[in-house]
Image (cartoon, rainbow, N blue to C red; front, side, top):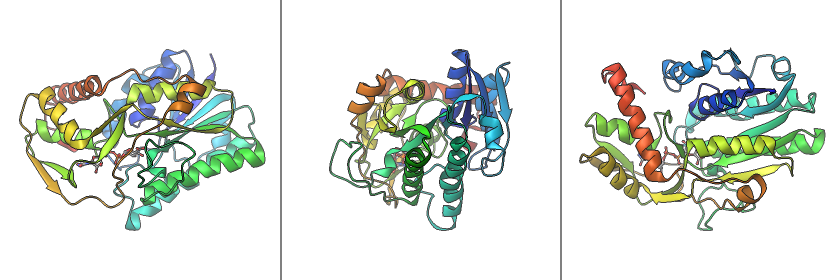
Length: 324
Ligand code: UGA
């Protein structure tokens, strides 16, 4: 088996992908700078299994300053998941972090790959590049008009992948994920906030009327899409990766109430700037070209995420549940 690199290896999707690559026999170089967007201790927890593995090397460095060409030499693929995530926090002075982590870091990776023509790049993009639209389901060729600064940075990086391919032959696939969830989901995301809030008997804040919809995607399906994109030898292009579970936030809360077996204290607050009303992935291209299939239903996936929080709570006696 060959060698691969994963940026953002300690994050939500990156840590699951690293474990999958190790299980498949790869030698994995995980790169992560443990930013404090959420608890770095929690990120170390994510990596516990991988770190103990003999084929895993952790490089605790910043993509914007480290020797990428040295790290990528000899790799078959770079899975680029490191990013400043979060749609709603990308306004104001915070935008600097988004530009640095999402645009400048991706450009640096592409510069390193210019010289290493055998290495493929799998870039993690986002449904947020589409913006507010009634043209549903979203297809890759639809007009792109992000409404959050975050979405604008993810789109810039997608464009950079393509222009490095056109000019220098860098091979890439970009995956537009649709709201990924499951064990280890980032603590700022809806499901995490709702589960933590409910387990702590805190009120849950719903932004807007709760009728907004998302095409929620279970993390193992997003990981599988990365593996398929790695092996894909067709056109250099972008693919929608959606879970096929498009539901409203109110529907999610209904399922959560059943699964948790308790009433939820719901408060409606203002809609958040930058949030789109609906997402819905047309995954025809990913199914046809990559062989992408979803395998986890929303009920099963939510159960797994709830169980993950419960077992964490048991381990910590409950006191760190709220801290992410
Ligand atoms: C998520 C990720 O956070 C982004 O990094 C990613 O790029 C994007 O999915 C994507 O599709 O690729 P988002 O859809 O905002 O963004 O995911 P959640 O934080 O899980 O929010 C889902 C919905 O719940 C949003 O409509 C949001 O307004 C709502 N929400 C969230 C609440 O009503 N209350 C909360 O406390 C949190």
